[in-house]
Length: 75
Image 1: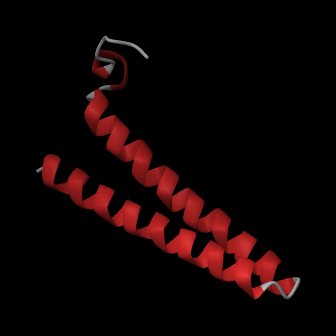
Image 2: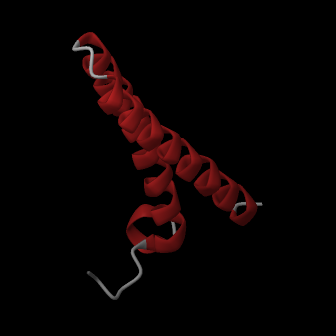
């Protein structure tokens, strides 16, 4: 992990970049989990499908919280 600020390269402060990255990762994970849910349902494994639904919900919550933080910092 670097101790220098990379905003000179990206034009975005590390802390802001980190929130952007986090939101993208949460949203990407929510999409990926949709495939996992469908796979579990196709195989008749409702327990696993529900597990993935809960994980998907948490990813959505993380994305929403991250978007809120990002919005408040970019005003």
